[in-house]
Length: 311
Ligand code: MLT
Image (cartoon, rainbow, N blue to C red; front, side, top):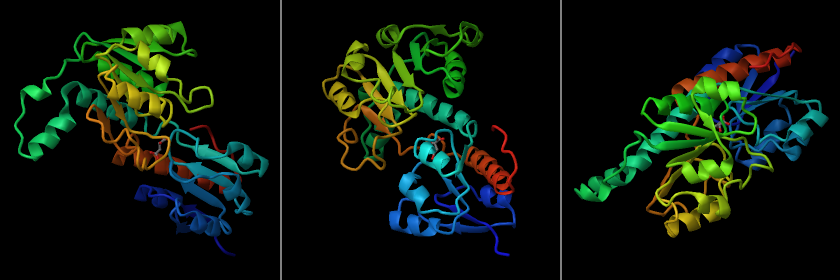
């Protein structure tokens, strides 16, 4: 009897294949090459993806044997859950695999903005020794506003508190007890925007949260404020952010995620007061290993017809 086909559509940690074990026919395809993906799905019992492969209704229809879609990461926004459910396909993810990595990248971006590290590096690499041009600000005694105090937001809060910051948060779902336990004061979104020196957003992408930081919200921020998005492209409206950075109504931004990835021709990329990275929040050895092993285990269980516990 032939082995079930597990299709790996993006680069995953080698630990993923090890954790799958010998019982599967493991195949690879570039999930961003649409015709190749659709052709490869014809035989697939399971597909493993990160964020670049669109597992939409068309992809699911192209996969008559498909039983499980596994997303090696936190979000599920590149998987059409409705279409999968309608086709009887299970969808699993690894919701805690990369939260530390995402939190650490956020802290890195905040420090990069405060101290102009990327721009100073680029200048010196070109032979320019410009010390006064790169005078920064301390985090100490600054107010950091976290939009979304879930798993990642909470890790950022505790890490930034070690710098002597005052952490405030907006999160409609957080309980008072949890916020108190984290030493974080909860405020309204407007209060957060007006009071914070650094703002970082950690919300899932939904129709309600898309563009939740737009022209009006950016206008409420201090002219010295910095804003960070390591969560999902489009939570901060890209055109509004571009205008705020060009008009210097805020001091700067750091962006790891874009509406369209890679963000070809995005006017954000060339601005002097932005730091950009190519969706690196989950890109550490540790996070990739955890995500790969977690989804491999879920796929094994799902293809054996067993219950897949919540990760
Ligand atoms: C996630 O949702 O966990 C990440 O965006 C995954 C990734 O980097 O591919």
